[in-house]
Length: 153
Length: 142
Image (cartoon, rainbow over all chains, first blue to last red; front, top):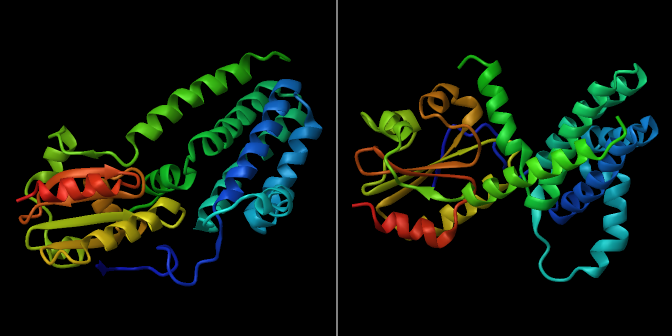
């Protein structure tokens, strides 16, 4: 195979940090539950909690969140078979998108703009649910579209 | 505002989208869609993709950074094409080839184009393709 024009920064390569691919999917399941509760109850506390988790996932790493801790200590020991690994950057990208939506949602909640809260939480929930139920890859679908729209060649 | 309606709406819409997503991702389409006809003429050159075209088939894989299936797709296509002397597999970083990406209407990664010996697109797979489908598609190109 000819790997050409490889920008080591962007195309995955040897140096990438690999994590257990089942971790982010478990985290997405918990995120779905928490965001569903937030959406129904309109609780600022619940969305703030999820925002805190997104913040860790986005800026420290998706393998460092409390959800990931639960996975590592309670779920992973019960799983058998080969450990599927993935580059840490795709799930971290998804955490950043979640972080943005949660910031908007919490702002809407605190500024008494319930429609802003509802729409932002709904999008975050949709993304988390798609990830959990369909192994949806947000970075695959979103990143190139955004780059295409915002960059000249 | 405290109703279950938004939750129900999100779950129904996301499920519909998710089912479409899982069905469409990885499927190799060989039909002559308008997009493919547009990109098919006149055909990609070795210079455009940065590597020589395969003597029979070239697989051009567009990848990006935040893409787990890109890694799996690279491994799969590398493995399949390893002992096929007439098939070339080229991986392109989509982000640094936006002009090509726009012209070929690449919207998500991984997207793999199947080119014939003239560089004309005869099929494409959006998402990680399945091994047997790739092998079938490769065998169909002459």
